[in-house]
Image 1 (cartoon, one colour):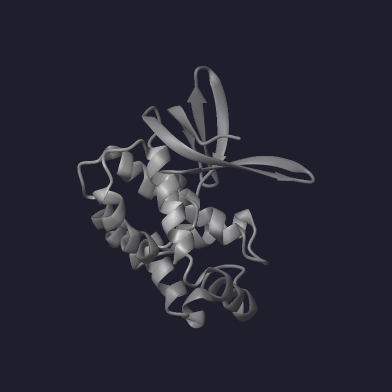
Image 2 (cartoon, one colour):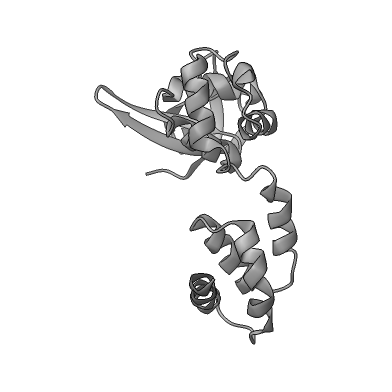
Length: 194
């Protein structure tokens, strides 16, 4: 429902922060509430989680952290509270590297994560975090054509890997300047032919 909220942090406590957005205080559970400073303006990426007995908002300093949270809670055995604990204990890059390398022992150091859950995290998320692909995506996007850049980002959001996009990018660059929509349509035709 919410993508982000922009406002002033009015309360910071060990479990959550309160973000004042035009006079409405939103209680946001975060991995590390103390990264936010009271009476300072922030744009916080938000995820709403609805359970049988609660509707809860979770807040993140970056969209990347929000996406990691969503991937963690998609794993059987990991709820929002466990995902926050995992994210609070480690920086995102180290956590993603541990998952990619299949380090079960490393993952079991987090609260509520035993060998079974650690194995499930690796099984569900290995290869889906794009740790090695992130710098490559920046290289793919390093060009002067904003419509093509938007199209490439859309393809990535649809789940196409950077390798797949890299293969068709030269063909897309040869096309006369198009709208992002037309680049996407042409890219999808090319990707389906592979």
